[in-house]
Length: 350
Image (tube, rainbow, N blue to C red; front, side, top):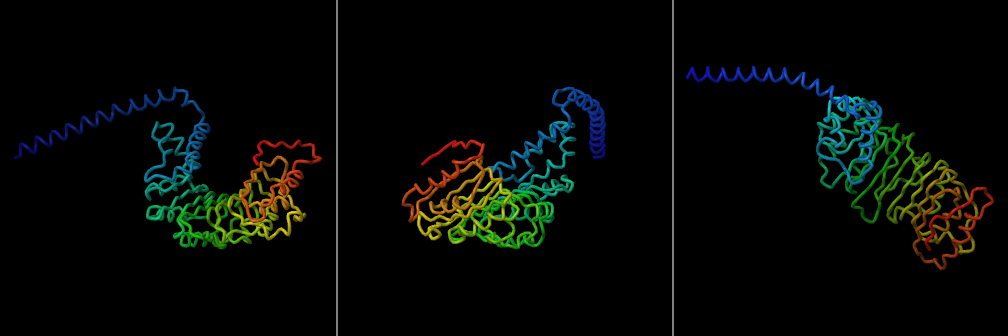
C-alpha cells in the first residue's frame, strides 16, 4: 500500500518537473513568435490605424439591425485573441468596448469596466420573455448620464415599466434615441414627457416607431434628424401640430414622416385655396413623406426646403383626391426659381 502511494507521488513529482521545463521552454518560444509577428506588415501599422479598423468592425455590428447581441462575448472581442500586439491595442482602445448589446452579466460588467467611463452606445431588443434582456437593461442603465446612443426595441406590454425606469435621471450626453414598439394594438404606445427627467440637451436624432411623445414636448426643439413611422391613427399629430413643431426646428437636416400623419382634408376649404404662409427649413437635405394626398399638399404649401434637398413623396388617396394636378403649382414653385442653382429632378414617378 505504501509502495503504491510512493509510486503515485513519484509520478506526480516527475510530471511537475516536466511541466516546469515545458513552461520554461515555452517562454522564449513565445518571445520569438512575438518578434516574428512584429515583422509582418499588419504589425507595422500604427496603433491608431489598427484601433480604427477594430472600431469599424464594432460599429458595423452596431449599425446592422439583424444583429441584436449574443449570450456571450461580442464578436469584435475576437480581435483581442489574435496576438499580443492586437490584444494590447484592443484593450487600450476604450471606445471599442462602448458598443453594448445584450450579453451575460459577467461580460456586461467586463465591457463596462473596459470603457473607462466613456459615453455608451446601447442597443437592446427586448422580447416578450425578457429575463436576460431585462437583467442587461438594469446593468447598463445604472448610469444613464453616460448614454450617448440608445436604441430600444420592446413589446407594448413592457413599455410603461421600462419608460418609467428611464424617467428618473437626466441624460446629458444622449445624442441619438430610437424607440421601436412591437405588438401594438389600435393605439401607439405613449412615451412619457418625463423621459430622462426632461433633460436631454444634446439630443439631435429622434426616431419613433409605433410610439409617440406628446407633440408639444420640448424634446423636438433642437433635433437635426426626426423620423416618425407607423404611428396609430388615434395618436397621430394633426397637420397643424406637425407644422407648429417644425417651425421650431430650424436646424433639421433629415425629416422622415412615414404613415405618421392623418388626412388634412379638413384643413383645405377647396383645392384652389391653399395656405400661403410658408416657413423655411434651410438645412434640410432629405425629406420623405408618406401620407394622404391632402396632407402632402398642405405640407408642401407651408414648408420651403432648399433646392438640393432630396424629396421623396408617396401620396395615398383620400376623399378629396380629385386630381393630382393640385401638386403642379407646388412643384412649379419649387423648380422655377431665379436662383443660380440649377434644379435637377433625378426621379419622378406619377
